[in-house]
Image (cartoon, rainbow, N blue to C red; front, side, top):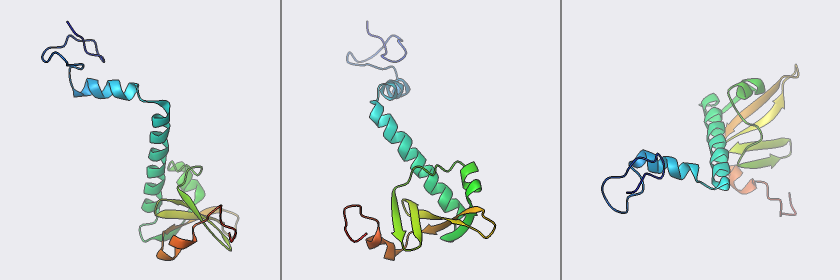
Length: 132
C-alpha cells in the first residue's frame, strides 16, 4: 500500500503513483524547492511589481510622481534591473521603465518616470568600462 507524499492519503491507481492529484504534487514540490530558487522568485516578483507600478503611474511614457506615493503603493527602491547614468543624474530601471530621483522647489522628493528610449541602449552603465 502506498500513500501520497503530500497529504498521506492512500493512493489508488498506477503502481508508480506518488501523489493523489496535481495539487498535492505541486504543494510537495513547492515545499521542497531549494532556498536559492525561493530567493530568485521573490526578487523576480518584486521586479515585476516595481515595473507594473512605474507603468501604471506613467501611461504616456513620461511623468513625475511623488516618491511617497510610489512607496505607499508598494514600490521597493532597493530592487532594479539596471541603471542609466548621464551628466545630471542616474535612472534606475525595472526592465523598460525607470525613474530619476528629483526634488522640487519645496524639497519634496519626486520620481521622474520614463520609458526606456532607443538612445539609452548603448549608454547603460558598464562598471568595467574606463570611459564611465
